[in-house]
Structure formats: C-alpha cells, structure tokens
Image (tube, rainbow, N blue to C red; front, side):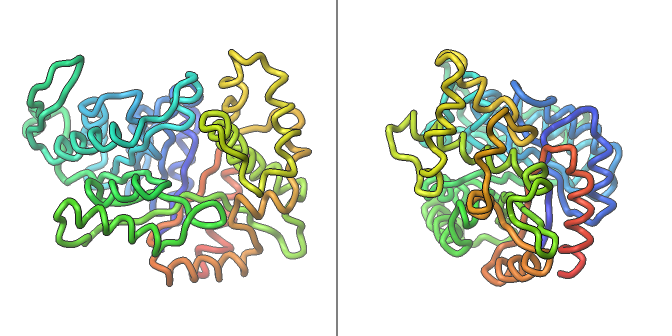
Length: 355
C-alpha cells in the first residue's frame, strides 16, 4: 500500500512536502482551485526542488480552467525539474468551478478532454478543437529543452461515478476515487475501469494505479469521534462533504442523502444568511481549512463516521489491511488545517509504520 497526502496548495508551506517525504509518504498531491489556493504548479515547482524521491502531482487539475496543452506544458516543465516523479491527476472541477458559480464539466466533454490530454502527454499529434477551429496539435521542442515528456507522465483520472471510472480505463494510467463510507468498494470501481479499458481495446491494465481519496479521523484510545480535537483536525473535511451535497441537491433537484437529513435544515439556514448571488462564495470559501460560525455545532460522531475513515490507530491499521486485500493500491488523505504537520507525523508513526 502506498500513502499520499492531498494538500491545499500553499506557497508559504513548501516545507510540508519535505516533511511528508521525511515521514515516509509516497506522494503529495496539490489542489487546483484558483479562487481559493496558491497556484498548484508554482507550488509543485518549488516542492520539486526541495524533495528527492517524493512523487508530486496535482490533486486534481481541473479541465474547465485550463486547456489541455497548458496542463501538459506545466507538467512537462515539472518533469524537467523532477524527472520521473510527477503525475497529472485531472478532474471535472468541484470548488474550482463552483466558486465561480459554474458547474463541473459534463461527462461527454470530459471524455473529449481526456482524449486530447492523453495524446499530448504521449508526444502525439491529435485533432483538437479550440475557439471553433479544429486542427492537429502536438507538444513541440520538448526533445531539446524547456520541458520533458520523458520519463512518461502518468495520467490519473478523477472519477466518482461509473461513467467517469470507465473513462479512467479508456484514457488513464490510474483512477482517483472514493471508497466507503461515502464511495464504492475497490472491486466495484475497478470493474468500471475494466469495462472502459475493454471499450478502448486496451489489452491489460499493467501499471494502472487506483488511489482512494479519503478523510481520516485518527482517534486516541477512548476518544469520542466528535471530540474538540477531532473537530479541529477534521471538521472542515466533514463540512466539505455537506456543502458538496448542498450543490448537488440544488443543482439537480434531488433530496439530500440520508446521512445529512438530521442537520440539513440547520446547514441550509446557515448558508441562506448569505444573499443568493453570493452563496457560491459562502459554501466553498474555507474548503478543507476552516469552519464558518455555526458549522462546528452540526458535527457529531455520526457525521464524522459517515464522512471519514474513523478509528484508533489499531482500528485504522486493520481497515487499511482490509482495503489492501480488496485491491486498493494507494490511500491519500486530504488536509488543509494547521494541524496537518502533526497529523501527517502521527499517521505515519502510528499507522503507516505498522503496515
């Protein structure tokens, strides 16, 4: 099992990447959300210069904010700084789009984007439509200087539904997805991946990486799941799940999921204190980093357990072993709070070291 961290991109905390490397993490993935955080590629460039073997990549780059050649140029530049230890994870966009009042990219557009992206990463010429004009495009000059497409840059597709998971099998070198309690089993996710690979005529998936993005609540013996310490450490992650569904409910006209029913009206009342035209600011503003007033009071042990891998070190060790037996290859937890330095150390010392 590999272990990674999804860090909110912060130009002032480049030392966190060396910190993670020193404690045995395989990777750190930097978020791409232009209205919230530092630019992910600037952060990763500095991190590349301060680490020696840590895998570095986006977690995830967003289709709707950059065209495929721009993503590839950024990654190929990083590959020149840290050859062979960078990866490009790509997604349709949650906060990056919704903080602008926009929706994530539609699945059919996502497929076209991935088709172009995969070809450019491979150094191939590919038909690409831009501004209504369709022409073949190809990354130029990379054989000589400026950027490297070799060693090959893996493309990891973020997919949280069956169709997107299938696209990972068609175009990707890996899948980033969610496991229970809020996602699906590893075997089910990989079945969708294999269906996509079969559609694309890919004979095998050798080297394909599956990676689960999770929240982790590491409890001390006897500590309740909603202790003040846990809410301080993981509360923003818990609430991120709530406002994700706030958008889903209002965009799609669906009911909130059962695990949110008991707090739904109270959460909506907090959000609706903000004028409608600015609510997309309010819901995402502190993504994974802080809580708005009134949000901590919504978090109880049941909500923590419904949105996080929760348990003592011994319990998490057993849970990770079970996930590895199910076929999970990498577990990546998201963090943006100040306690991330301490938490990264504790998780390494208490969980990773025992696996």
